[in-house]
Image (cartoon, rainbow, N blue to C red; front, side, top):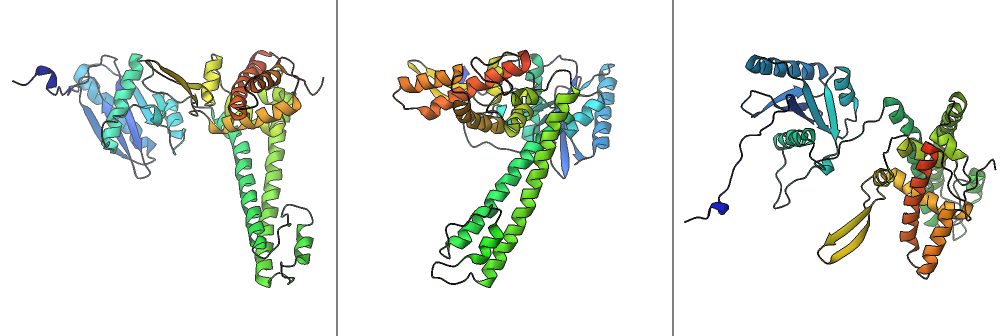
Length: 390
């Protein structure tokens, strides 16, 4: 006889009494798949397609779902919507909230999936999984998923300055390296494309065998220099806007913004201050663990039975903030050598014989982030840190 525990138990119904219509959105350019679970609908999910970007059609579909649920139960139920964070950004979430619809944006990487075999993936399967995730989240199940904290349009717009500058600087490095590569193939290895006299030097260059630069090569390099000029001008314009925003906030607000407060610390310039502010410190955190986790600097333990070790930081947070903090930590040792954090780093490295400096600098980055968060939120000055106006 077959053993009872070996039989497959297929659950076809989802039991819920939360009193709402739960909807998931699978978004694409061509169409949006609306998967819904309504009270009185025999606990079965329904699916409908709406044209991509058709918010009016989406709201009409929601009203139809409410009308059907009201006809079955005699009650008008609210709509609760979930969607994955992706290329569409947050405009759909904001459009739903404007129409008084409860909306949630979930980190897709935080949703648990089966790892037993090759996983099938379709919009239908993903839509149903999102509805089940939303149900578990509304029931209050811990760690079922990670909902994204949607920034305000103003905070989201402020991020663009630092992000645009990073893109422009990367493009400038790319063009500079291309020029160096072209010249190196001709035996020229001491040309710097970012110097002010770069065009004059280009006319004087000779190949490794003493010939003038070929005319077509010189013309190509000249066009690359034109692109560098454009990029340099754009970088300068972006930096002026960044500095003006910080200066304006510092003058117009009774309490300085985090960026303005960070600028008062020796070793932190406008770029670091703007990134720390726009990428992380503008948010509200309840404790230091949340601060470290948002930057991906929280520890990742691996414990099972007698095995208990650390895997390093999680790297699950904001990569821009984490990279900036590691860079700032190296500069912190140079500009704040007498601070408590710098002394802690030196003592830890000394205790290990000078090894593990890279892992120690990551630990310093986590401590520094928490200290800066306390400084901008509660005004707690980092122990031993020197301010610029001191």
